[in-house]
Length: 462
Figure 1 (cartoon, one colour):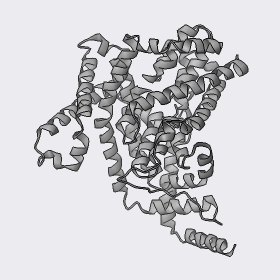
Figure 2 (figure 1 turned 30 degrees about the vertical axis):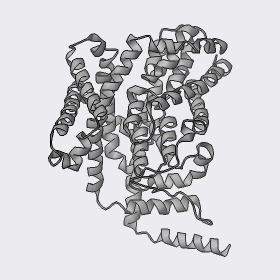
Figure 3 (figure 1 turned 60 degrees about the vertical axis):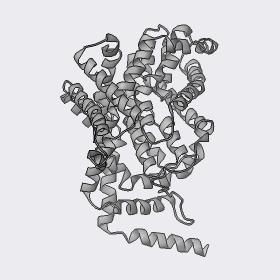
Figure 4 (figure 1 turned 90 degrees about the vertical axis):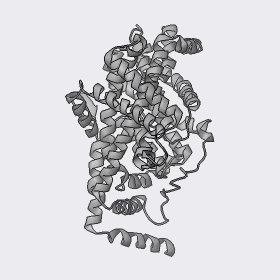
């Protein structure tokens, strides 16, 4: 007892020894980060966050110019990747920044070139309509890419407010026991979920990948967080509800989404392939996390100390801004071209081939067993979400049964893994998770959440 009291006293004295400048260095950036990423704001009946307001404003102001601008970026990315391969080793490839942006493997280079071709064809409405159609390349270039561009711009610039100034350390320490008990995850993963919930799922994935590369998540933890906590935002959920004409019951609809998501997040990390991931850290970074609390010290007090220590490590604002700008450029040149290429391919497969319809056949008897009306019409919506999150709603919008539309909407939001956005983010990241594993996790989440969604729909709402 005496030893515990001594530790507690030492910690209290150490916390109280920080200067006002050190406290403000933690408090001000963290407070701004919370306001931008985690505080819901209602504007015009739409729930969003501060980051979303800035993103929507920029997208609204330059909506006509963004597709052309990003097409130029995608083409520069492809041209740079080709040029770097042609230059000698002692040439431009020796530059770290240039090498990181353009010196990629043959597969990723070919995807950049493919993305550039798709972007040009879609922008100019040239070439085969299967590529430039408003259902395929048009969706990616004119709907998806602008959203990703503005969200990643502001998220990359302001995410250091969450990561570098101690907020993650404080929250992680305080909720450590609850997060580990339920999900076998460190406490800081709760911030990823909140960032997705209030903002957008890609922001949550970006946050997760950066945390993994800095040594704060193991391979298993990063895989679990990215595939279970990158939940759809409230704003997007409302869009889905309106599109399916069930927005008049949005509260029970979103309640069902939350229940399904929580159950899946408890079960999926405990079964393969996620349970088989190694609990080792990203090798170049090593383990950089410690959320253990000394005996005799409150979690909040210890979290405050670790937070102020973390903030004090930041030596200049310029260092933070430079890192943010680099992240923006990296995503625009490295990720957006892949979204254009693979997203278009996924939508072509979904819209112009029977692949997803064939794959959906096993769901017809399941839906009948769950007493879901119009099971044959609804079955493709259970599987097509792997290509894009919005496609199930497109299929479900023509279904007469409100109960069926309700279930389809819930499933589209709880399956989480869709290749036009989240899937590409994960495959491109350094998190060790592959295409086949993503498809398996998608099916697992579908099988787990479908009975729950149907049960709640039958018992509570219809």
